[in-house]
Image 1: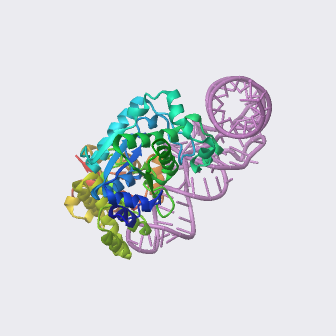
Image 2 (image 1 turned 45 degrees about the vertical axis):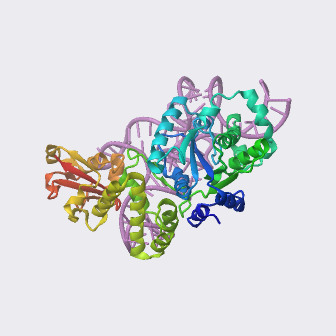
Image 3 (image 1 turned 90 degrees about the horizontal axis):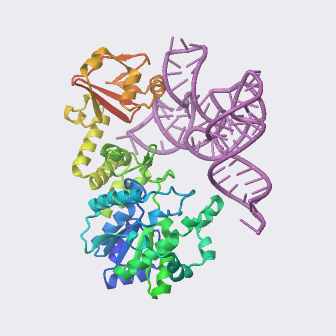
Length: 415
RNA sequence: GGGGAGAUUCCCGAGUGGUCAAAGGGGGCAGACUGUAAAUCUGUUGGCUUACGCCUUCGAAGGUUCAAAUCCUUCUCUCCCCA
């Protein structure tokens, strides 16, 4: 098999391919131009978006040419694939703003060079389409009967599917055709929920141009307990540090299930395959250390080495033995907030303090935390919900290390 | 356009005049056990309150009633069937 393809396969990126032998052969003959599309529907990429970008880096490093297609046009419609209800219609301004944000994040990760790796925007050919011409030239190649047989639509036939979304597949197919004509793009990659759309595009190119193109999908990454990868209680694991801090990002990976370590190392880092397998083969405490490695590697790729180092140090300070006894320098990395020393001297209700630190969203929640024995200030358990925290609770550094349960830590600094 | 069904707390879903802050499950949070894992067990899960209790919440707005998630009116939205 072609080296680039083999690399994807051994790292677990391949779910389905329209013609793996044909594709392998084409890739052996000459570098192939491939694309992956993504609709800018939110203010930041999240980790779920990243699988294709990791794949793009692997393929690019193997000598192939990649196009990142921003769905500035398709985002106006909404892709029904894999969604149980209609997507919110987004304003054009918002789409344009999101596109910029997405591209900046992608460029940061992929480093576009403009020649072998670049971006395109389907708004350029979709925004001003003539409806009648489109129906005559493109629409006639699509069989409604066939479209209805796709899984993506079957599901929605139960809950309702509007005409606007029903057209999404035509537009995505048209994208592929355009990229084929403009850049000689012959491979589309994407999440497995895109299978139907990808196949439809290949079909369209075959009918219109008589050319053979390929499609390749990645597995939809789920955690081993069946949740969508990258979803946390608070929402998706966004790349924007203002939305998800590098520390929280790091902690997500630090806490993955044992059984996910190998897959995640292979897909979300660039460590050699053998090393990934070795790290994942460990057990007990050693495997736990592998998770720290995984967390560091992924954080370094997304937020840079410096942030990864900081997050690692902060995690050590927070979890390495008793938090307050840990080495002084590292403690500064725990998420913190300053509070006037006078306020602390005057005394603050423990419940209010936990709310202030963001460790509880309401006083009732803080009260529950105390009642259940999960509230700790500088290693002293808060026994009474009426407790007042004052200067006598401060540690040697003039700080209060608040803990809510075992995993959440926050530091209040007296200023 | 006609006919039917429906909208309940983070999600699914019970509830058809007072005993409803609303069963059950999921999820979340906390505790025990651990390796910052999984599984398991226990507790908890609208807000304010030390507490008695008070306040807000059953699609929206009105109304009936001592009392409404529950009854009536209008509206909005969703699904199904017919055209």
